[in-house]
Image (cartoon, rainbow, N blue to C red; front, side, top):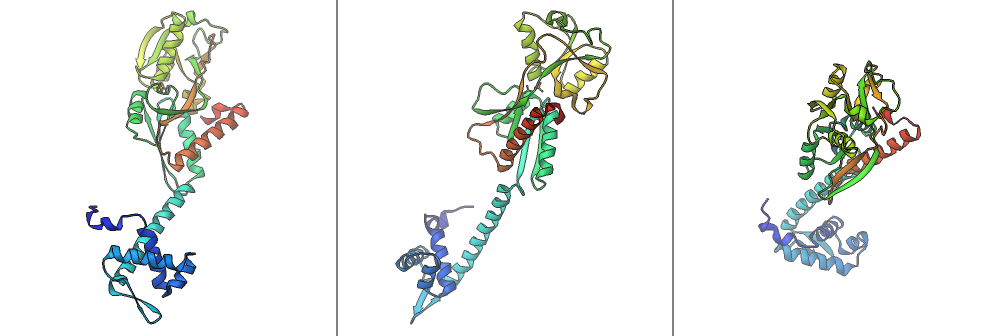
Length: 317
Ligand code: PGA
């Protein structure tokens, strides 16, 4: 909207002047308007004088003791009502967003984060039915690009970006475990060495995946190389490949998802596992987090704490 024609109304003080003008017209008196607005009467006069100068036309006239509104003044009064109605409407909207009766939360998570984040978001949405919630699930590289573009309200990573101006807040543990098919020869064995695991056909996530990086790191720290059998770009595909007998893999325990009673997948007791990792909320420095995002962060951390206290963190699955 070009604003050059209304520039002189955009200066500081026009809104208070309009509010004084409206009160004077409604009450028909400078004195009563001053009383209502808790102002000194000369202040009211000055405000009306300034508004009249801005308008460049007479707005009020005093005949005897009575204040009358002029024809242009009546037009300004109509505009005043519209402006105040618009502000009231926007304030109602803001109030409902602040009270979480409306508003929006666009959460974006990595593929691995989707298992617990969708459950948390559903529980949050249930508590705040007026909030419009949406969940984006992406591979980590895409998620990083979206974060750089400020495309969503809030992000969940297990491997938060190291570079870039981001705020990182820990949520809860994300243990990585070694999954194998229930009939795997190592299933049920105790204290399996990493060297022994490295000889097993290994299924690994795509480049860029946080889970992949963690798996590679655990072998590299011991100067080992896994016996790579296949690269797959999702946790679900890896689980299917394990079930098909193609190998074993290191994945987040949360990837069991709703199949936590899945009997065909077992975790191997490898020394050093589960790997201790965490989930993190991430957002760009300087981001004005929407009220719904702030509330979701509080909700999720509280829920995670309760579950950890009860010893059932996997219950978010
Ligand atoms: P993923 O894990 O990229 O392997 O899905 C998430 C993360 O580490 O952020």
